Structures are given as structure tokens and as C-alpha cells.
Amino acid sequence: MTPPNPRSEPADPRERPARLTVGVVGAGRVGPALAASLQLAGHRPVAVSGVSEASVRRAAALLPDVPLVPPAEVLARAELVLLTVPDDVLPSLVEGFVETGSIRPGQLLVHTSGRYGTKVLDPALRAGALPLALHPAMTFTGTAIDVQRLAGCSFGVTAPEELRLAAQALVIEMGGEPEWIAEESRPLYHAALALGANHLVTLVAEAMELLRDAGVTAPDRMLGPLLGAALDNALRSGDAALTGPVARGDAGTVAAHVAELRKHAPGTVAGYLAMARATADRALAHGLLKPELAEDLLGVLATGAEETR
Image (cartoon, rainbow, N blue to C red; front, side):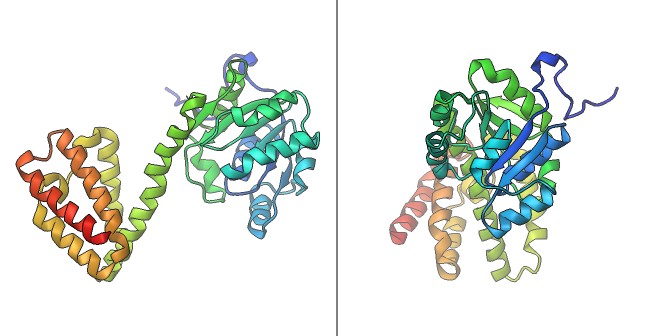
């Protein structure tokens, strides 16, 4: 049987958006990649805005021959506009477009913020725009590899009922999978992703630094298989995948860890203690950490936290 094509279009033509001219406001890591992906699906990027040298380079690499123009000109040229700017900039950007009359009735306005749903686009909605929130749950490099990684990537999607089919079609055309997020749930959704992805980078970077300090010449090679297996086990089994000295209740080992970290990398102690306490709580709740071992362990963590303060 032929495997499904991740970029296959909806079977019903009524569910397919027309071929659209696409503009990008904010040529960070996300916007050019999404526009390039839409281009593969048959849409036509026509304008991109960017200020920094890095933005200009990304736009040139992922969207060659697409002109770099001011943001208002992007809206003037495009039927589908991707607003790929930082979360804190988005509300004022939308209001500015409305105040200057840059938004056209019937224009698809898509932001990629995880924090916001479509309510942040209400000023544009009143000006006649069609609002969509399409947040790819992926970290971006700003290179062509991002376009490939969109295949199978989940998108947190919020859209008015009448635009759900259009939102779904756009996500599928980019190779993604739509996951519907209620407007009021967007901040919690985004916090969950930040907790998992952003903090993971910090944890891995700190672990590699500590391994180098311990004399390991290739910490990435050492951590790769271990962390890959841990991630796979966690996704498959949740809390049942917990292992290590905290889950086992090895209070002496944890105390030794805290002492060594305080000596060699004091900046990591608070994070270690916080994650160890969270791990202990989850291990206790799921019956993995024996109550008779938990008391000493929690005492070590409490003492470490008090000394850190």
C-alpha cells in the first residue's frame, strides 16, 4: 500500500484554500520556513519584511527572489500574511496596521504565536481581516532543514468556526497536523511547550558542561543515546519511565550530587533541587518512590534549598 503523502491536499476541493499570494512580516526563524513550505504547496510568496542582517540572510536563503519590503507593503501585496514576530510585539503590530489602514477586507491574517489565540487579532477582524492562529510546535533553526521538519509537526490551531477548514487545509499543506486549542487554553498550551522544549535545552547544555568538567571529551556522544532513550520512554510511559537516584530514594547519592554541584557549578544547584523535588513528588504520587525512603530524600532536598537561599 502506498504510504500517505504528508503534503497531500484535502480530498474535497471546497476544503482547499485557493492558491494565495503570501507575505511574511518578521523574517525570523519561523516565517521564511513556513512561507517556503507554503510555496511547495503551490502558494506564491510575494513579499517579506525584515530588519536585521540575519533576517535578510534567512529571507534570501529560503525565499530567493522574494522582495524585501516594509511591513505595510507586505500587507498591500499579499492575500495571506504571516505575522511571525515575538509575542510581546504582536498586539501593537496589529493595532498599528489597523490604525494605518493597511489591512484589507478578506485578507487572511495568520500569526504563529503560541501564547495567543485569535482574540489578539480582533482589531484586524473588525477591519475585515480573516484571523487564524497557527503555531508550529517545533524549534526552528532558520535554515532549509526546518521545511523538512514540518512534515508531521503538530500545529496548535485556533480559528473561528467558519475558518476551521481553511486553517486545517493550510496546516496540512505545510505537512503538519492540526491540534485544536481553545482560545482560553492558549497560555497553558504554550507554557507546556516551553516547559518541555525550552527547559530541555537548558538541562542538556548544563549536563554537557558538567560532563566536560568531569573529563568527558565527547559529552554529546555520551548524552545522545541516553537522552534519546529517556525521551522515548517518557513519551511512551509517562511517569512510569522515571528512574535514577531520586525515583529510587537514594538520599545519599542526591546529597553527594548537591555537594559536587555546589563546589563545581553553583549556578546549577537551584535547578537541580527544583527538578529533583518535582521528580520526587511525581515518583511518590505514582508509587515508584517508597514512602519510607522519601523522608530522608526530601530532607536532603529541603536542606539544599535552604542553603541555596
